[in-house]
Image (cartoon, rainbow, N blue to C red; front, side, top):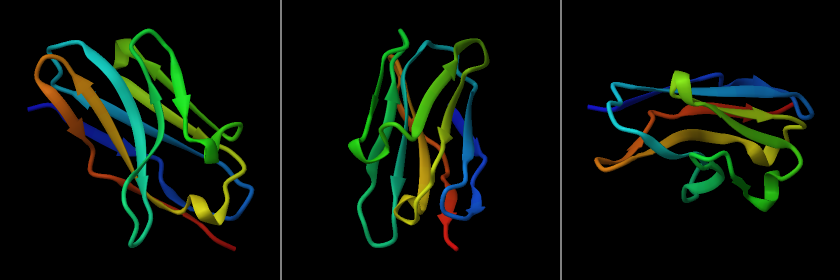
Length: 116
């Protein structure tokens, strides 16, 4: 069973930064796309950023210029650097990995709270 373990969430004030990490374990197949999603209370889960196997990236409009997604293929790890955090960034952040040919997998989520 492929497992994703996330870390780095926490409580910060507006304008501060956090760095999230996600390690994919027990992957015997190649990892294609990796990404971060978030879900605010009483809202649906939304895409924050994706990074493809070749290094290409895309971001939600709301985080462009503030967040950066990156990956370390040798370590099976994806990161999300979050700068200039705003209260509207608050939510549970989930890591996702597309592992071909077996399927798509999700992490357990890590809480990010931005409040003064």
